[in-house]
Image 1 (cartoon, rainbow, N blue to C red):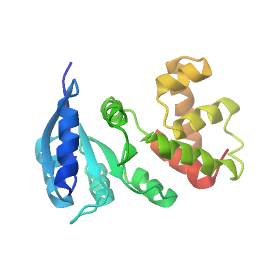
Image 2: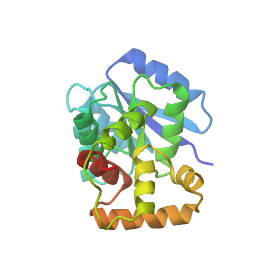
Image 3: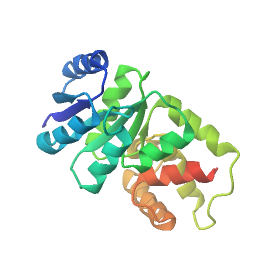
Length: 210
């Protein structure tokens, strides 16, 4: 199995060193470079072509959300895993909408960072920290009604997506196959007019569904 090539972009040397040490002792993950600001990070994304970019959002130069947006606009083949200390609802929505495949808190325990890197490297989107997943669920409690054309089963799938669950976890939770989960996601994307699980989750949180 090919190694997951990871680029670290963070302006704090101690943070980069700690994450590098963690990842270099994790099977199947290779740190291929480091950057300390957004400009350098974008340059290395273009030249090194990493599979996953662990991207701090509070960077000098080009901020992290702008780096993510440029990666998306240029169609660069890498997954962005945002790393931040913020748990503000609007801020998280903006980061996910900018093209990030996931959003983790800097306080996240090591196993979750590794799990998230492996997940987004497989093409999964919508990874969030356990803390953020719990907050998203709370945000959804007192909101408006969900769209009438979304079925109850699709709502269950969408809720699980917002909670940060993978397709495999959703399938196990609902007692259905992964292919059925994927079919429901396709239906959700079409009905909501979105292209990814991140966009669907952002819309659900923004509209206060559930």
